[in-house]
Image 1: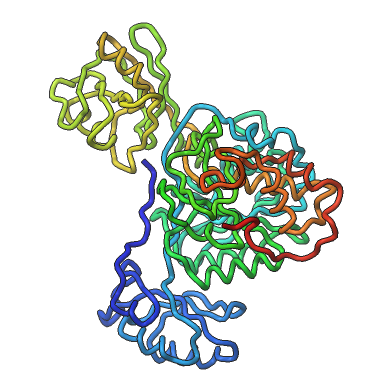
Image 2 (image 1 turned 180 degrees about the horizontal axis):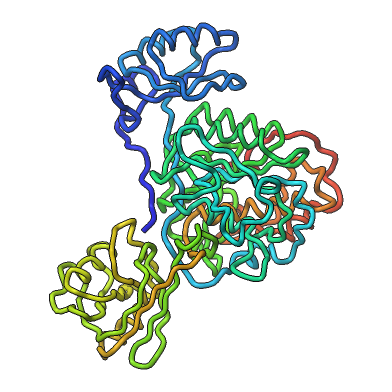
Length: 531
């Protein structure tokens, strides 16, 4: 299951002086002293004084945000109290961590474009728009992304060490970008804006470790503004988040909104009512996830900040070349619908089935056979490993609740092909053990779940709406209002915490804007109808 933990809740004792720094940001310095990473916001006219104070404290500067009046620094923990009392500073706060918000692999059909009406709207005018994807990079060698590199598709490398923007070690960014703009090239999939017109700017902030700091996100926002194609409207797409609010980050996104840019972020995947940031800021559209029937996804966070919903369950999109998986299963002369385990080894096995129960221990009689295992108790990776250690040649895991089983091995190393099937098919195979065949092959595409997958649907739709001939003069606030005002109402009538205003609709938003934008100019404004 692809899921990323949030920051630890424990705070250093210095929280009592007015700001909290979690122990997860602390690291030893050169002399062994514990260091913490913070954002130090200074008062107007106090830049030089703040710089002197930080230098005297032995600070390592990661980012200098002169326009926002602040520094992202690592300082000895013992110096925080003194710095917080220095009159040059407005406040000092934790440089919070931000994570990709993928949940798990899923479903079997690329349904999202029709559900959001993207297939009803031309993307011919989206050359007037830049979508900046802040994520883990983009595999530019993918056949659905190899047109316009260096012109229509450009990027920026994070200086903190995430790597080159044109590679993607975690697969997340390539999947997000594919939903927005995978090419209509006769193969693979198509994105919301598929005809190679939309400008993409990729800012890589996640490496293989899968997290970054809020200060890196703030810098990425600045790179988006600097790197967008000339004279284009800017949409910032962020399939990421974290549980801690950051005042400096909030200010950065508020500034971007006042400048006329539109920021969109994932609501989070904890399945509770906690707010994730940056989605929770007033200047950012928070996106929840629904499935193919437009029903709220149970992992999607719900709260009064949720503004729009979009497809986020079983979303098929691009991944770095060769890292995706597809599967096939047959048994007793019949085809059995299946889903490859995310991270499964590639391979094919034809052998007798053996019932391995729930796979909580080594399946001792699996030698040369295919393990049939029920979901429950232990992880999918442990089940596959127990099959393999018993000599099994492949693993079929069947659901313990209604429906197809979609799972991930979570990075665990296994060497046999592994797939999921439904509860009904699993029970059928168990009642009649016989010969089966399992095959898992490498592909350039994968099914993912998460509010990370919902977010690029909204970003792509926003680009379609802003790229129409009659809407190019609209402000970001007007585009936002059209998206929320035309959304397909889901759940209880009106805005609610699960769906926001409802499912984003491209054609309806364009119709709502009409042929003019009412003469409003500039950015500004908070969340429409914010609770």
